[in-house]
Image (cartoon, rainbow, N blue to C red; front, side, top):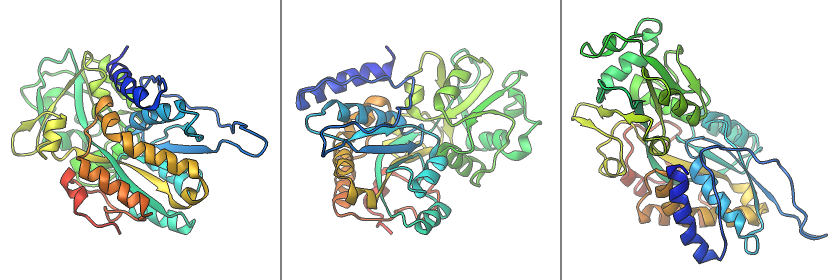
Length: 352
């Protein structure tokens, strides 16, 4: 059993005691459920709650959805969960194809405009923080840290076809090929990483192995001794035997990704918020959706920690619950990436 599954078994044991039910989850192999509506009686049908978006946020939402659906006596909603990447998820969300969009970056101005065009109003809810992790294969004996400048040199468009060996990044590293693995173009991780490292969203070299599925990247780096890749912290935490994280030096010394360095605002610029966006109109028409989001916010702290991300302080979850109950629409991020955004910022930024 992998680390995430072990932790979830413990967590869900606690939740099962509280809800008198048993939950099972396998986060290592994300699957898409077949859409269907289950008949309850002649007059009542179970409503489907449709969720898509980020593969980074997927482990949190999957764990909570599994537990939610186990308690059929109390909760009637059926969750249909898949992932296609944050950007692709927002396209579906703004086209009214989903009720919730998982996002590893804030909604952008163009996406807000697309939602407005289709009459989609949304409630933005932060659920966790992530330490976007740059990792190498566990057999790599030479790389322990990397500077932001070196990452830019490696990932900027000008590097394509030119920076192809380890010693071209740092002269003390070996003259061996460097094989890159990174997020695909529909991924919010791609948007955030390029903005934070290259300096402009969606600007990157393209000669690397890409995927919107973090597990694909993990498997690639984990089997390639010359690999370097980036993905969410939870995916590193669940594959420590195959991967080695690099400490990031943004000018104040090299810092490893961890809950502690994120909470202290030391892991910059790759600490980022993870969010869900809820269709406000769907909330009015689907009581099951409100039940699910209430359940999500209630169990987000313990589930976030169990799958390897960084839980928010209790005040942040309380504020999110308050905004949700009030139906407070809009975003605190002004429709753009917010690099070096800290957990404490969530408590003082007004919704717009």
